[in-house]
Length: 264
Image 1 (tube, rainbow, N blue to C red):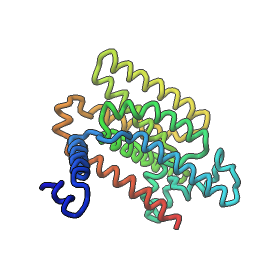
Image 2: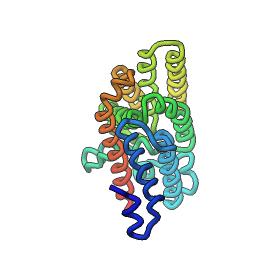
Image 3: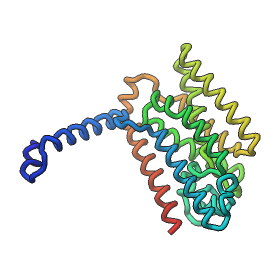
Image 4: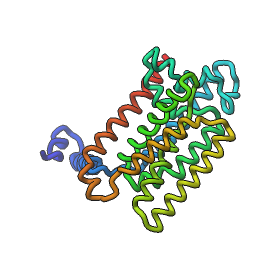
């Protein structure tokens, strides 16, 4: 189709729109190949969503009469309203979206700051290595695995935080870079192990959810043991990985949308 003639015929700048369509087609082709054609990374989008939801948490806490105490110690009711995982609501009321939204809700500024620091340090380099599609699926999959283990470990406890998914990124990196071998890959593996130790010690100090940490780490390590290293194999599996990516984006967006709908 001659896009220039089409837009010229309706009184629009055909040349400008032709270049836009070419750019869109190029981006669509890059997405089909499993590449990220945009300037912003998935790890940074996840970080911004966490920051945005925490801002809403603080504001709702203030409007509920708790003042600014929600910045450091939000109460349980506010956490549940902002998407915390509480299995009785999932099982008895069908609020399955909490299995996702809990990973974007945090129990105070210190909790948020530490988790976002880990995401900022670990996320972008791993995303560059395995691609945006693989990274997004990994993040969601390990977040789900983390909370499912919590169902068997402590089903009556309110759980929040991205640490399950973050331990998933770390667990994945350890097995994945170990498989690659070589000085650089092993340096990456050791870097991730240091973050795991740091996060574990921090978790002990603040009484974090060890079930989520274990579930995330084990599921991430399992994916890291099978994720394709070869570029050729990745291209072959691109339709599968991209399909999982699309399903992950829809799941995250739908879960956050249902969370917002629950406030209305």
